[in-house]
Amino acid sequence: MSSTIPTKQELKSSKRQLATVIDLSKCMGCQTCTVACKNLWTQRPGTEHMRWANVATCPGKGYPREWESKGGGFDAEGRPQPGQLTTMVDCGDNFQFNHHEVLSAGNAQRKKLEPRSASGEAPTWGYNWDEDQGKGEWPNPYFFYMPRKCNHCSNAPCIDACSRNAIYKREDGIVVIDQDRCEGHRHCIEACPYSMVYFNPVSQKSEKCIDCFPRVEKGIAPACNRQCVGRTRAYGYLDDSESQVHKLVRVWKVALPLHPEFGTEPNVFYVPPMSPLAYDDDGRLTEAGRLPIEVLEGYFGPAVRQALATILEERDRRKRGEPSELMDLLISRRWHDRFAEFTGEPI
Ligand code: SF4
Ligand code: SF4
Image 1 (cartoon, rainbow, N blue to C red):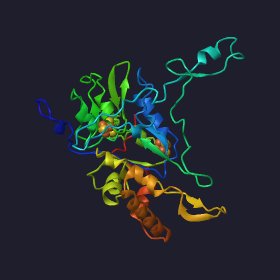
Image 2: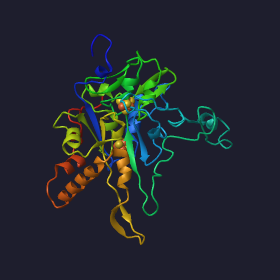
Image 3: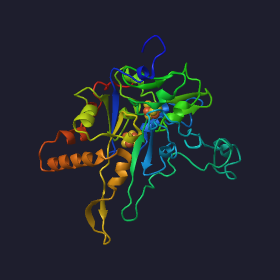
Image 4: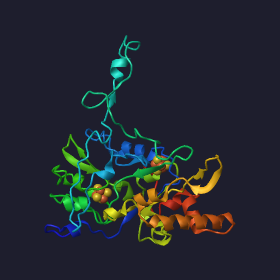
């Protein structure tokens, strides 16, 4: 970045690019990643509604609620276009229980636990209220889990939209908000088509995932990736030819960005979920998948067809007893193999 006022292109540039890969076939929706992040970064006043890392059921309303229909991103000329602001209610209304009232002397038999939203009313929406609902008719319902965090996009409209030049890419590709420069105008919240920026009503500033950069600088993978009990996640530099992220994204091309049509060039990539097999009208298992390919195309674009075909081909190769680098990568018998140079232990 130059010492004069930086251009948006300079703010969006980085020497290298860190990336995360998440294998959706292995995610079990346990929310360990969500809690790992929440414990580290959003325990402060004003951050109660924030989940920089979160997991939602797909298809579903997601988190923040209905984020896919809030707009943002770029217009036809490539200019950032504002979408809708994320509200506290969209994030789950930050409701609390009346523990104090129920646990006060003499109240245990007369009072019951009741949730109350910030406005004092019974909440009408909460984090993952549509968990596991999914779509499809019995006996062939379907859903999968979608863990999300800021994509640390290479073409980030949040950077374009900030009137204070407070948002920039670090040299490692992580997108951060300079809290000293931010004045809380919230243009970034309107601009992010992934609704991954949150407003802190206490500090009156915008906040988002920082990809655990204080850990990353010490060679420790971000908490959401490191703590994943399903071993779904890989982390590293995209240009590191030895890293799993490089191999899964660039070589095998089985890890894809979410909603590539937004044009932000995300750096979180997903191995699309394999479908459970469908039953026919007589209750017999068929060879057809339950998860419509059109649904997956809606999330990951047309490249999802080839990605799934490649995974199936390699799975068949392994079934025949032949070696498959892709299957070894996706299984990852040693967790260290997933995180390239970021295998340090959290202190
Ligand atoms: S996901 Fe949103 S907040 Fe994160 S870099 Fe991309 S546009 Fe910015
Ligand atoms: S910790 Fe791993 S398995 Fe659990 S919800 Fe998060 S990504 Fe999925």
